Image 1 (cartoon, rainbow, N blue to C red):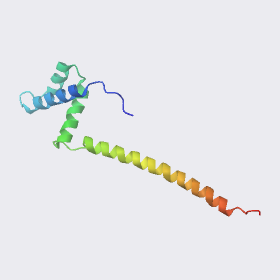
Image 2 (cartoon, rainbow, N blue to C red):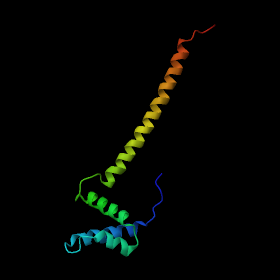
Image 3 (cartoon, rainbow, N blue to C red):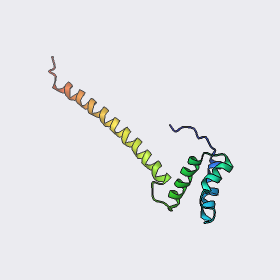
Image 4 (cartoon, rainbow, N blue to C red):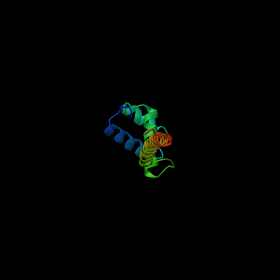
Length: 106
């Protein structure tokens, strides 16, 4: 289960949008994330991570998009469940195979 978020989604979206817009201006590009983070009271590294992820999601930067990460997590959970079910079926199969091999007294 994911940890609770420290910042609301609205603040995250607004801060990311402001930082991306500030970085588009060549004169204000240097330190745009730090200025925006300080203005909004957000940790600078947190905002930098949000901006990087927004750029990846927009296709401006290479990396794993949010949708891809969610899909990967779903697939990993499914693989875990399938491996667990496989282990259960193997042990049940071994149990019943052993039952068939035992001599029956009549």
